[in-house]
Image 1 (cartoon, rainbow over the protein chains, first blue to last red):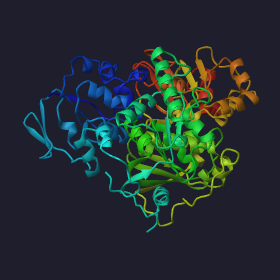
Image 2 (image 1 turned 90 degrees about the vertical axis):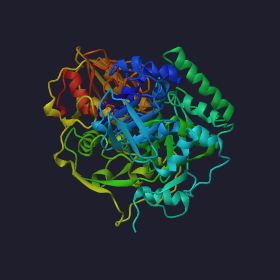
Image 3 (image 1 turned 60 degrees about the vertical axis):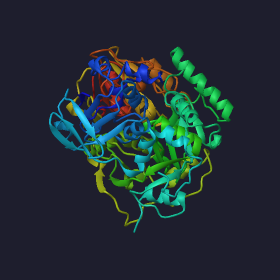
Image 4 (image 1 turned 120 degrees about the vertical axis):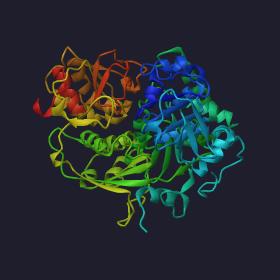
Length: 165
Length: 416
């Protein structure tokens, strides 16, 4: 699993340009991921590869086509110093694990990376980088495999209790 | 303990005290979907084994990003949504009305004290109506369509207090660009921006919408102006709404207080490729431009078009610039038409399009080629946002856009 390293403020227009939003199929979207900003990504990405980025990854539009393009490319984990809010939710909802890592900037591009969620770190080129646990209320959605599978199990939701998720 | 505007809205809708930081499954008063994010939301609704939406009267559907359909795929997406609307009994505004956020506001579909979601990041604009409104993705929207509720982490708030009178040809867009520069592109992530102060109290709804619209450009979950006499006056003739107390308590706890005096504020321009790269217009004046876009949910209202027309005066737009003007909605278009603005723009050399997102969508029309420069009254200037990743987009107010369109280069509107 190799690391694809990105800078700060990677926006959803960069992840998937607006002209491809007419497509809803992750495999089709994946062909255009980072088109114009990092063309080698869609050509060379392999299933299980990991995106590592700086601050505010996924800022901008609410387009779920962005995390879908990445799932279509086989990405299941994104590590960043911080995430934009809507992208973070969308990622979890479509089955991507977004991990916050203060030291993400130190993880080198192209490195082999392994992830140990239970122990709370990722390891690249012999160095361990601690990652923050996913907030408790989102853990159930991740465990279910995404919000769709989570929602299938729900008969109804009780509003305002604050205990459903 | 005092409550912020956001805490008051969540507490009021849930009937118990709710504080920032709490995770709550909140009832949704209205949910908006459009032609880009709607098809995915509907597919997710079905994948969640949804059969009937929770309340068709609370679903707002319209098409604004690729209208009229500019490709067969776009046509298929819109047809798919039309079928869904017919089956579910959802009122579909289709391609008739204009940009989703403007339509929600002018139809009175977002009311003070409500919790509203939209499958579009600029949904935060309805904060101008005193609603808590936020953008969500299509899977979250599928969940909302089925259950009529969504979980939220109730955000802390940043209080933005604005005083002073705007100088000549300086306005709300210049204010919000300067706030974005100070707060930064992610400085308000997971927070709400609560606007207040005499300048906001005296600001018309158009300007409040511009400010709330751009809260997302600082990462904020919502931007909000507590409903006041201006808000309720706006609703008269749109929809009867009951006044709600959502003013923040004097002892409300804010993450941060920011104070702005606009008296000394000049026109601002955000440089490529981030919204928080705003500088005073003087610093970029003289930059040659290929295209000017006046429109979008941020600045496509009648007030914005009137501001541009006032600057235009009897001049013509430069032949070196392609000027694209798009009213935000059919209502705003009609106001501009009746005031004679459309004729003036067309006479001056502009291309006036029917209400839609236009070049801001970066996928329909008005795209930029490599090396081209655009000056735009919209909300985002990310690399590739309006076409080629080798193009450059600057953001500004309608006044600055109009002045620059006359001279073919970025121009201080106070010097025309």
